[in-house]
View 1 (cartoon, one colour):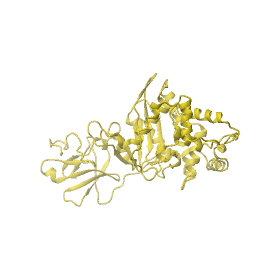
View 2 (cartoon, helix red, strand yellow):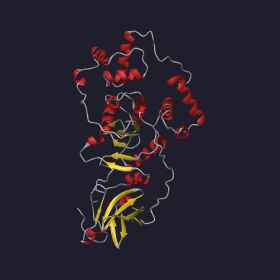
View 3 (tube, helix red, strand yellow):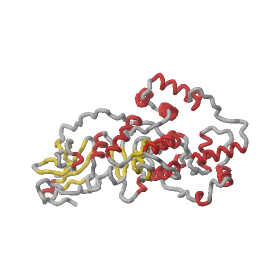
View 4 (cartoon, helix red, strand yellow):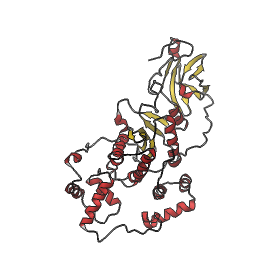
Length: 406
């Protein structure tokens, strides 16, 4: 779905922000952005010398206007408010003006008064802030990415399903795609683009619905197996507990307020253009209160784990007992069929004995995906459960009507 129309300026800004972060591999970034090292270092030097002005072709616009009058300051405040789709309040506008290098920056309370004086802020909207929350975040970028579909909305040609992905530590938006469906192959295509640009995370957090999970009760899907194959741990939020993905939920609220509300879209391409215009502003300009008014770009840097265009062969330890998963999702072990799940069909799994007699752990690549209990099998029950302690739905033994362990 080639709808992305990110400007050259946005790409240059993103490149230099990553290149100037501590420990950045500039040549690897040049490869990901598909530019020559000569061009990449030129952008870096221009940015160091002139800031953002150095990235603009033949432009020397001054950063500040010393002769700006009070009316001009008010006009700027109202402009920033309008550009946020009439959403930002006093603190956020003040933070944006500070980062933009404005010469005259009113206090947040003054900005709030300006908005109220021009009927841009009502008591109803001022009272919408939910108050302090107990926040949790990973210690470093790319330790965890959160992914979800925002609730779909109507467009002239059907419905748009926005697919979003955030870095848990920085809130940096990695994927913002206007999709026509919520299928696994659509998500995989968009993630491949993100992995090539930003590298791969250590883990990904998603909810319990499709395509992340199987509605029939299977612990894994073809999509989650693909992530495991890439060395990415797959995590799921608790059912009916959206707070687990609170950063995604908050991002969706911002996206709805600043981009979707009050606007109509003709087709998916129209939606994507609006997303592409807003995404750089969210990542690089919009102050985030949960980040002490920093922007997500100030806390994010790409992952050193590069996306492999060709997957390497799976290697297990010499002592592992390797079995191939058949087309029905079973492996054969100790003359018995054991159900692993259809998502793994055609793949190779390894069984390793544990310190407890009769218990084997089942591994796929570097991930433990299940536990096999021979003692339960001897009593007429197959004891195969996933890492969350859940039994997969359906018969556990092939050609034998053995009950599922609970």
